[in-house]
Image (cartoon, helix red, strand yellow):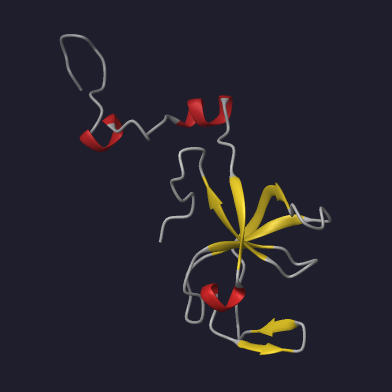
Length: 111
């Protein structure tokens, strides 16, 4: 804390142009651009008929975004795991995988 001005100096990482405070994040949520991904590039598994089967993949929570293809349910967050190569969003209804990107093309899900 800087005693002369009674303000807290931000660490260097918070001076990045990509950093925003929690209040700023709530006021203007980032818009995500979703790109459908081939499951074979995202998850270790086996193609079977019209589906792709993989072992023990756990979702980490429900997102606010809905599936752009089926519009049935909210997408699930899938982080890197034993058989997951790339963090992504997953639709439980139509079983599609999506990459999430910010408007400047930066991946929203950091590896």
